[in-house]
Amino acid sequence: MSNEPQRTQRAQRKKERKKERKKERKKEEAKKIWRSLTKKWYDSFLFY
Picture 1 (cartoon, rainbow, N blue to C red):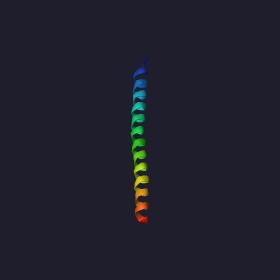
Picture 2: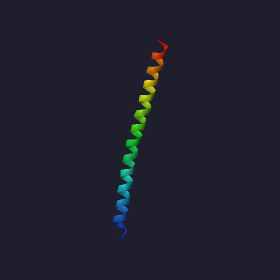
Picture 3: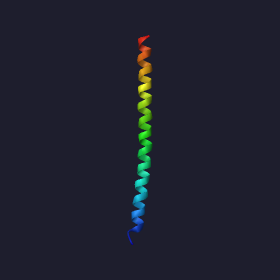
Picture 4: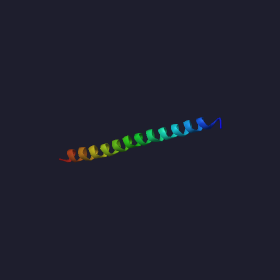
């Protein structure tokens, strides 16, 4: 029973890390999308 609080703390930390990772992934995804869009726009701009 003595390690019960530690276990819950660990679980919470894991959850928070997961949340943060999800946020980071979203940011990266947005960056990728934005980069591909701007690249497409830039390439089409160069052709005219």
